[in-house]
Image (cartoon, rainbow, N blue to C red; front, side, top):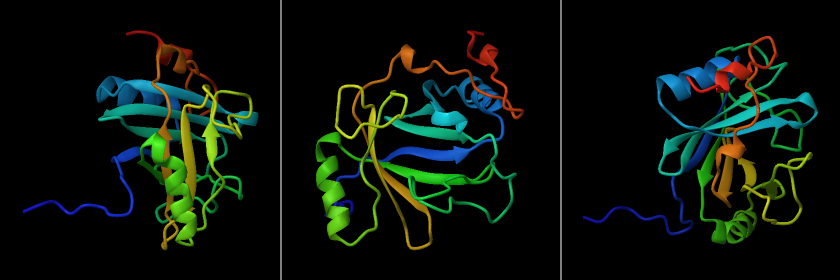
Length: 192
């Protein structure tokens, strides 16, 4: 018996699951030190809006966490952002799921973006994420590390098609995680 095959897209698994944490330092300690997941990318969001850290969960997949300084406290039933990126508030509560990023091949990213639009899906513009001050490039450059497009499912779950464009190295982990009080804790990144 053959496995069912997606006839529309070549999905490669989950690129990353983006959750929201209350304390990035404790999150790093748990996922990296307790579960053994390598911390492979750290991002300080522009204008003090928080942080976004990525842990390798294997097979090129990641579990990522946002820390927002003014995120609502955890509350059952508040499980998703109100808006898509650039369209308003994307925060969600501690312990909630912010969005699911589905990994796609980089060479087919533009094709899949067009296919979503052709199917009538309300998608954001393409995000070429880089390490510049705006963390965005209109063009695909050598500094872009992931390409993304965001959309909601019928229940309001935020989904992302994401394509890594380069491998990470030690230089990609350069932001000290913040504690629940918003203060950085660089000791968490020190070798144990």
